[in-house]
Amino acid sequence: MKSAVKVLVLVFLGGCGSGEDSSKDGSVCTAGSTEACECDTGGTGERTCNSDGSEWGACENCVTPVSPAQACDAHIGAVCNLLQRCAGFSAQINYGDVATCRARNRIGCEETFSAKGVTFLAEQMSTCAASFAGLSCQDLFSDNLPAACDFPAGTLPNGSVCGADEQCQSGACRMTSACGTCAATVPAGSSCANGERCADGLKCASNGMCVSPGPDFDTA
Image 1 (cartoon, rainbow, N blue to C red):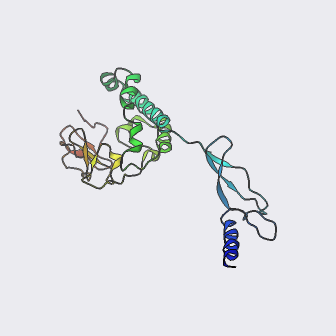
Image 2: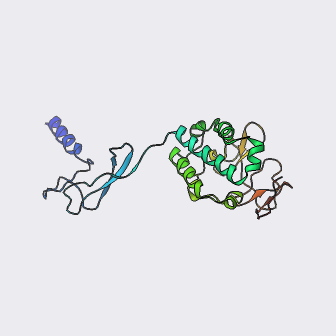
Image 3: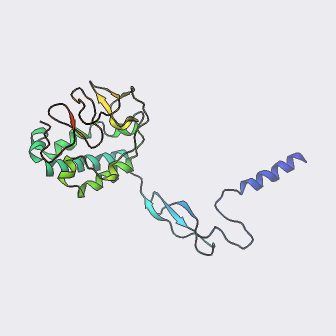
């Protein structure tokens, strides 16, 4: 008898959480509710239950997965094109051409996504890259980047070994050699001559101090 009861309980629970409403009125979902769905073109989206609860609508707002390789290609390409447009002379001296800029900066990009502490996704990097098309040169020089490029902070606490800002809770990896250390950013008027990272909105000037960049800002 106990075994039969267990079977009945399992059968009942097996119908829970399926996303289908088995109410007596014949509805299959709650009107206006939404759930994740698989898109015909690949990726995931969202579908909404119709007004009378009789069926789910089409899968919409589909998001196609982006691979780390695709994200890196898009991001590095956008950055190099932006440098060529806004700082062509410097880009020419440092890289020679856009192709070389892409090749050099592409090294190690994909490994960033699997680095310890990193939390942002390839889709976020790809979205950031797309937003660069409308970025002005003044915004670039002032570090006034689009909101899409505000990647979430990492999980490593201060004092941890790091190689990129995105690994750190503080958003700052202080590079003193091949590897760096997660550290707090420093405010305006503080030294940045030894790898310290200036707080958001500040730049490290040619005199080794964190300052708010103006139209004549000099990093030489």
